[in-house]
Image 1 (cartoon, rainbow over the protein chains, first blue to last red):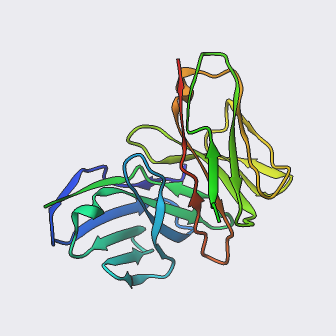
Image 2 (tube, each protein chain N blue to C red):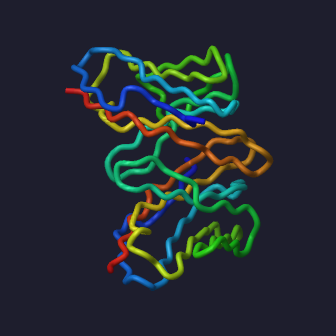
Image 3 (tube, rainbow over the protein chains, first blue to last red):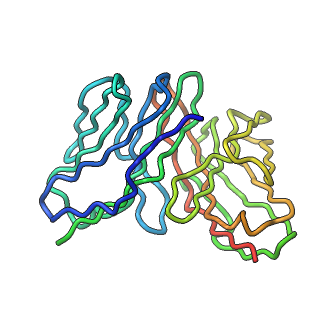
Length: 111
Length: 114
């Protein structure tokens, strides 16, 4: 059973701080990794994609991938109250374009 | 572009009733997906399609059926509704390219089975 695990939270951080969200996956054949943000009552939207080991930065967001440790993370710098949402990690394994989603981490940014 | 549209937005069913959740996309995407999301959980794949006439099961297909007669439409059929099918259903579409596969989600259908 291929699995993707996330801490469900809630993760509470003060405004302006760095929020760190983590995700581990079980299938070593996994090739592509996605972070989606989902506001309460809304549909998920893509915020980051990474497929190579290392860091990838986009504005206030940085995705980090370590395939040897089967670990992917999302850092949000200068966190804002508008970042309060559930962050879903999704993984694509080799030979397929299907996602396996984690259960999501709920982030609360306190003003 | 409207993106991915779903109807209805809300529905209450009685146990044993059937219904079809509609999904349409106008982005000419070849891949389409149906997910369900239970409270506090991630998304579970029900069925997906890689093109018109081609469908396959996901993680939780029991109690559901799909068809894909056109690129645009991917309806999900619930037969003999059960309380365990109470959930929010999301349709998504994508056009994979190499390692990249951004999925675009519809607004969801909130279904309650009583």
